[in-house]
Length: 116
Image (cartoon, rainbow, N blue to C red; front, side, top):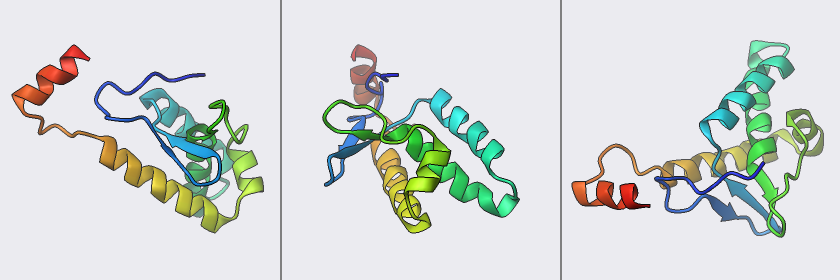
């Protein structure tokens, strides 16, 4: 599924130095990742790792053709170390925060967003 540019974000993806990108997720994709993680986690202490893996399954794409690197959260858990998952999820979270214009837009900025 291809997701259009975010209405408010200045950009919707960042390139990693390995031929892959991290992209912003729609609200629906975030909910789907949370639901998948709830099914994967057998104990509460596993939930954070599973949540990050499921998020990355949706956010990590090949740069050349924007196809997912992993089929699902289970594939992320099988293919990456816990440290890699944590590092990539941290980069995605920082990118999401940078891209979020917040609710403190000026009237001028709000009008520009409406026009886009």
